Length: 116
Length: 109
Image (cartoon, rainbow over all chains, first blue to last red; front, side):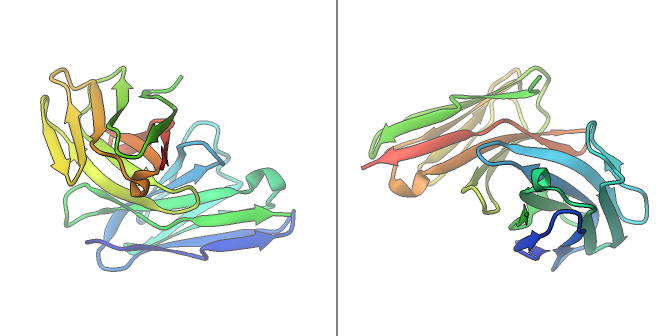
């Protein structure tokens, strides 16, 4: 099966700092990657769609200047939470669409962000 | 408003009992996915349904998509502690996967 990794798996940062989360497709090329956020006891909420070589498309209510997404290659997308605040503490999950395996989505294991 | 409604939101069943989780959409479902998640962990893919009336089974889990392709159900037979977790349905719309709010399943011994 297709494997998607995320790094780091958990991170603690101080309020006001920025943190970068990486999403990698390990054994396939991903034309599209998605970033989700999940708060405790809630479902996954789509934040943005990341397409390789183009600007990310953000969902309504998601600040693009705060959540910077860069899809630099067919195997890597990064999400940078800028000037993080405690309310940004959440579980962030990415998924990748395998170009050569139809349009199925493969999910990463998630990154837990805690902002103190 | 939620595009995908899951019910119930929470379910507690005794080990060995059967249970059903429903996922209802206001729009036609062209691709309906079922995932299982333990909070703080990634998603485990269970099944994908595309055709009206389609039914798929894996071990003790069966998922169905109705003929109108607006409702799906996930049925677990003879539940076990390993079935506990959060079940999410997801719909493939405009090449984006949108999730229902999830159903938290607890299995009591």
